[in-house]
Length: 456
Image 1 (cartoon, rainbow, N blue to C red):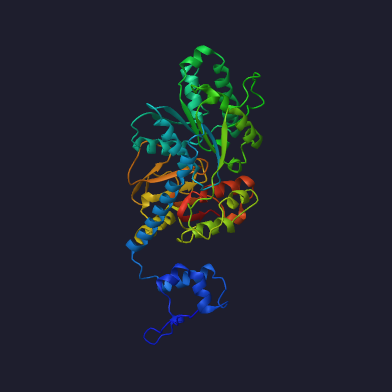
Image 2 (cartoon, helix red, strand yellow):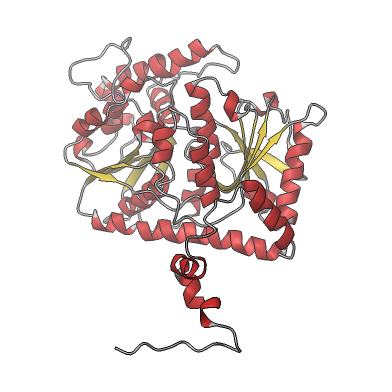
């Protein structure tokens, strides 16, 4: 066989040239040109120096186009993965396990809409655990046009309080400032216990709402057994799920989709009160599915998570898969708050820089604070930031152009193009498993841009 000799181009040897075809298969091209030389890793300081020297000509609109393209990549990838639901459409009940960033919430929403459109329309109960995610999903559902059926989004706490009120036994949550023990007893014992007691009266059960299908996001946070201090009967097994199924027209035989990841159950919630095996036994015909790692993060963020792994977060980070296929993006930023600088000034400087450089608008940013009340965070009690309204994520009404904020505990299930985390100490100073879990839950809400403002 005769080999075709590649001719030089304007006197330049062909093997010195890099063409479009070479770029599409870069590793063999690199080895052809350089062999095994120059395989040293590049540290972050070297990378930053090159970008500062040669990247200054990049226009803000070009950077914004790059960020937007990555967002479109994430969206297309999640939409394409909905084909999994097509393949599983013959299964009446799905128990779907997926790690951080696998798209559980988006799959749950899509499955809810599909159930709602069935036949002449079905009433679907979509259950969440935290208030911020509940508010966000309500806004999304309100924007989605459904010709038939209805998707009703409820937080578990909101649902249980509603069931008590319908029975004429309203229960008020502990007031702000209550002790941790008071809050724990209310949500683990008093509220679930009262709902269970009410459920034993068929008169009250008949006035409770009824649904044709159930979708549960963050299922690992919904207890599969009752607290030991709650008196139960022999046929009341299944914890909160026993109540959920009472609200379904076909009970344990009803169409359902449960999305969960046992590794993401918070350390402060008793791990033994969620058991996937009990969840399986609760349903009549469940099919088990596992979501594969998805493209939800950029490679720098993926590497940042791995570099800051701890025993309590290692399993969740490992579930993210390998990062070779992930898109590039800006490096995460870590800032130490100087004693002479107010957190507001530093956060506003980050927002301004991101906007001026074309990376994102301030309304694309989610600010996450370690404290439950923003007034107790380093930002203080503020309503305006960088000239924009600052709104809590739990607020149902939409406010275009505002900057959203929430606490770490309420951020679970949310994600945002850009995140600024404030109020936690440096990662190396995190003391407990709970601190490490909270840190990862916060930083993993970011898809592309992440800035951490560390407290001393």
